[in-house]
Length: 319
Image (tube, rainbow, N blue to C red; front, side, top):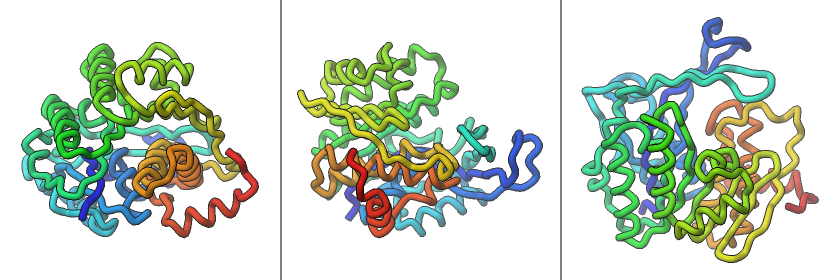
């Protein structure tokens, strides 16, 4: 029985096989991308059953994604085939250091036409948690309405809610609307996971404690601020503390894209399994660290056995 719900836009991702500007790349390797699908894949690999709601074009890339998701053990009932609009595509560069160039082809995609009525298809029986990001509400007005409706349904069915802003400024009609909508959605959730740089845009400060103050003043119980290589700052009720991330050697870091999604996987899975929030954040830091050692956005996400091996490698590390 599905215990986690996610909604978003999966994309067929073409990763450059050569260094240099994308316009000079001759060959690519196909993979799968999308913030919410990354989180879902991470959760299913750790043994959690997930519903993933999306629309896919009735085209080769849509069929590729549907097959990948079923191979990752997603419930296929909510992968809606759409014969009117295409599946989104992403190009990703190859770099020796730093973040790669990423180019999206997602305007008027099938997923951008999701509606609140699509949310009504979901059977919430047994659902314990809903994870929401700020990407679907940026795609279109109908997706924005669907996101609000998903949160309302989660609250009605007593499911816990986590929210990752995942800012994609270029997708929004303007900055002011983005800030208003993102913070309004965050205020309706139990846990918010902004990055410090996102916090500066959304709250006016990149100070983790001030970011936590801002969201707790909106009614959020738990705020976890991601601080990249410096780990995370956690505010749970009145308690606040920092947790260092795992010291991955610089030569092992090949791609930082997807690290935040891996972090969310750790936090959500930990809470579902009854870990304390502190231990869940340690797991989040661990999975984020594993992810930066892999080129793909999600292929490095660990199984329980992979996670045990990683902890054993850093046995002496104290967060």
